[in-house]
Amino acid sequence: MSEAEKLEEEPQSAANAEAREFAIAVARIAAENKATEVEVLDLRGLSGFADYFVLGTGTSERQMHAVVDLVEEHARAIGRTPFRVADSREAHWILTDYVDVVLHLFDAEHRDYYDLSNLWGDAPRVPWEAQQQS
Image (cartoon, rainbow, N blue to C red; front, side):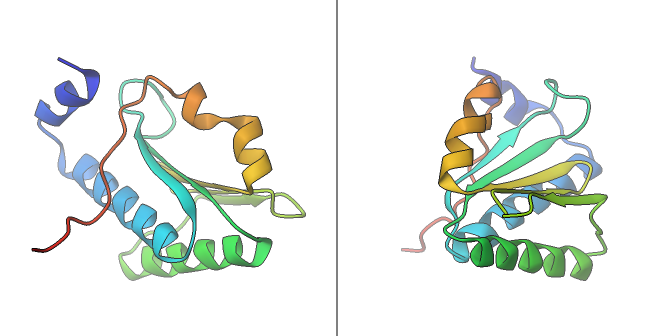
């Protein structure tokens, strides 16, 4: 049984279910606003500092900031505030930390350089894309 299957079978606490739901919402907001290569990594059991990473690649500084603004707007609407927002002067990487969920938006060059997908390669990927209605 894969690690992802084991985690799917684990009963989720209300807090973890909320974190997972928020991570999926963040991924969808990023993708709907033209971020590419969006992934949700389940870090439970692998990290002591976050349950989920949401990774995405932005197309421009302006677009990356727009995604962060829309995520923050959604977060406020559901009673969440970021613990920390950090971005490089030229917006090569913007990190928004909600404690249990951390959003990482990169430009393509820095996404490849830091390669968090590979660094956290043991983390199960969370399916987040909306199911197509038939």
